[in-house]
Amino acid sequence: QVQLVESGGGLVQAGGSLRLSCAASGSIFRLINMGWYRQAPGKQREPVASITSSGSTDYADSVKGRFTISRDNAKNTVYLQMNSLKPEDTAVYFCKAVVGLLNYWGQGTQVTVSA
Image (cartoon, rainbow, N blue to C red; front, side, top):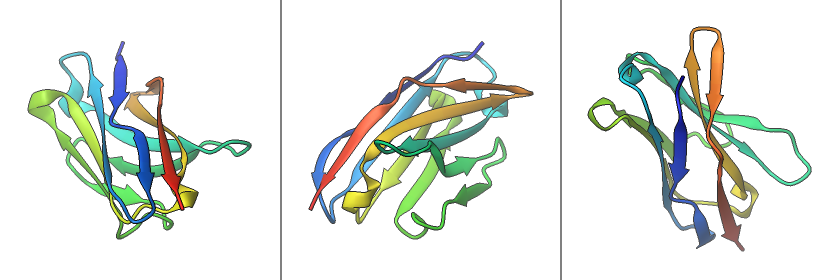
């Protein structure tokens, strides 16, 4: 089983930056594909960015060029650097770990971007 704890959310003005962190338990972190998702009020949860165990990354079109996902296997942590934030980025951001056929989710962290 994998436990995930997100941190780093908060309130920021449009154009600002935040860095989210997701700390994972367990000794197999380096083998796990990780992802960030977000859910805005009244909307479905959507993928934001992902990173494989080998470091390959993928991004939603809406965040390409602004967000960067990375991982530190020594710290069992995945990051989401968010720059040039927009009010439409406001959402609860969730971290996901994929282990085989199982998905594990964190509790989420709120990101609010004011205009």
